[in-house]
Length: 374
Image (cartoon, rainbow, N blue to C red):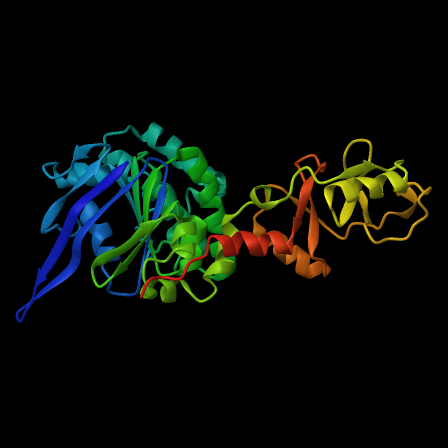
């Protein structure tokens, strides 16, 4: 856990004082990623650098797991904090192994232990140790160098990581891949991370919390969903974008929006019985499943099949199914791709668990959407 209490930085210039960070107060829990977001010059990078004292605070406190870092020697403090920057900062005259081993060696680890740690971390970063350990930074692509930079920051297993636009210089395809890999890694490591970005989409994807800055002030500190649904002021609404409601689709799971318990029937059910079930539940359609519960098709309430027919003989094939674990962005995309207004939802075994329709998605988003106060 990391806590900032009234953290402030004032720079003195020949003509005036500039307040770069103005009484910043927030708390980021263990295992959370907090993304610091805002326009250039708003104070987010200054705030990040005050935590490991690259920039010395003018006032305020930083607490890591309840320990006040004010009187902690700077070198000791920095060894407890992993630091990753956009420029990566790998030493060009050192091999990848030597780069990753820098902090462990400073901490007094023996070389065998440090090398073992370097190999483990490269493997975590999807970089084959036998291929990359003895290479030099110039022999790696930008994306590969960035992964090494993250590995180096993790080498001594610090409780806190600071990341200053670590993926900003990487092309969009590799950037998305590295973001996904980092999130998978974070589920295992549960580091407390503060992450500077200019990109609202990256913040929504990566963050447990978002801190939005403007002119040195912390304007809103909340979950990504609350920032998008309830921006505290017009500046924030403008910053996160006019499509902020659509961005929320990536934050909501299908399982949280689907209608569970919709009527179903196995394939050898008589159509008359299936239609009776639809009338009782006021459903527009009924999903026909196999004996194991996997969707095979559907019967529509307005269909005119003979009531004596069996569902297996006259059900309409389902255009697409969506995993209940998927997010609504993926589900809505699948609806558009297949020109349908509803989807059958399935569990990890492919068994039917509910339905998701456009009307439900629209209602869910609209129900929690508010305009910022002027």
